[in-house]
Image 1 (cartoon, rainbow, N blue to C red):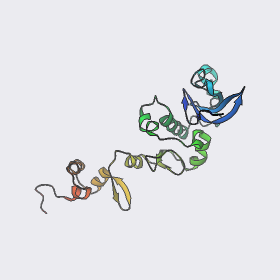
Image 2: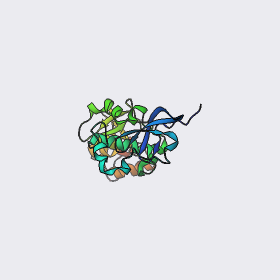
Image 3: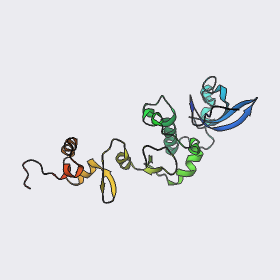
Image 4: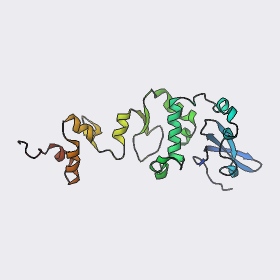
Length: 207
């Protein structure tokens, strides 16, 4: 019997992890709620009668029962939850740059425990999740922990140059060489290469 594969889809606060089984001849799905708790939901109810694990209707006990891993208040959980939302939640502002252009979270990382198993031991305070290839999704082979400066270099709209065998931002490169970043950009816009734009003497300078 054919069925809709709902893996990775979002319904309200729920993101589908995987197919679970059957209940009264209807397919059920294991889902994770934004609060951190998992729930088994009949597929036909997703997006209709059910949009959360139940935490929305039981706020008095939600804090106590919201998680099975005890890490819902940690920074790494916040990072994971942000990753999930960027790729699945149409209502977040940055969705168009992630899920909206086909960036997905691998099936193992849909659940926090799977993400933590792969990335948790490598995390330290102040780091953020970074994709090596901005056109590929979130998975172990494509992700590292990076500083804010490293992430800035890897943004899609950041101009990059090779320096000492590593990529750095053009802005940082100009700063190291004591060159004007704005003048360099203006020159590049006229068709100059990066090397020409940086190395060409300013008008009035002696060659």
